[in-house]
Length: 502
Image (cartoon, rainbow, N blue to C red; front, side, top):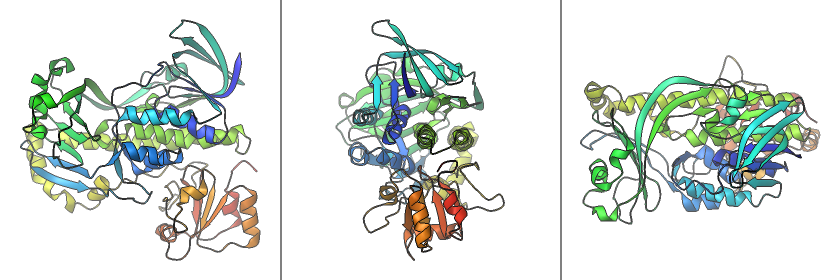
């Protein structure tokens, strides 16, 4: 029986990201995917600059830029297509070096993710490989696999298994985990249309607050457009598979463009749910992506959450496997990610309910309140700022209990030396960012630990960032999150690098 350090079940964006990150640390991985080819239909269509930063970390900065387009934010529309409120996002490089929001076509993203994976010498990809069982013992996991093309059965042994196998996860079932429902279920019609015609619409997300049928519109690519409409009781996607039935729903945006110029790519029914697994790990098996959480799509964070899972776990697992981190650091994965994912799901539920609930009464309230939303302190930031909540306190997030600080937040991907950004210098390693000139001994100690020293010069972006947390030194983890921040560059600051390792 073949033995590998890590088996990844599922080759969607989460699994491909986890495999690539592990490969960058030299970890041998086997990726098992039930299907041979990429699922051709679009699903996820949006991501934020924090996740754009992850794609750049994978080496896909230019390739993703070629298949994506920045979006300008969110507009709330009434049933007559009048703008109730508008929340704009910056389409230029922001604090992480990328637009705050980007639109894309998921099959194109998966294509470049798979192509990039082939460049990783330590990763083996197997398509037509359906995982049928995971069996753990004290030293590893037996993974039983069936070749869906030939029917042949075989097994492989892994030190760890990452279950990235979606909402109907066998990995989740194998560890006895169950989804906890957070109380949000809505049936929606999802429509993807291609056309060479220019719809002439505002290049952002349109949220239609119509009590008869809530809807969403966005331009996904050069010729691709996405609509989502809430289904009424008794309706199904089958009622809208031909353009004659579909056109009345989308004509508010397509105007006088001839029906013959509109090509239906997909019409599907989705049940939007808000769920979180009651546990994300059992010993050597971890859950990531939709196997661990399901997010309503109203803030475009479903796929983003899976890539965040991969980014959080990969460097920790690599450190455990090479002996530089203690095995106990793996306990921080669920602590940190579960709270973050739950917060984003709650936000999506709030936005979705605010835009769709209440019938005619809700519509009256929205017409009265929406034009004044920009006057509510903090609400504009919530709608336009792509920053997500800090990670929960853990052994790798040393947050003070009584005040807010930098710990758990992402270090900005700032330009450091006039051209290169923070991520270019850190390159997946621990980093110490400080506005205090370190001594020769401190420099030597930081170098000995394999960390990167980045001095934040007065007035620089990193210096200003440290100041927002009343800090002058911060330990930044390989995933960009701050482990610890303080006012002095103390021995304890340097000791925080590679906790549990040398």
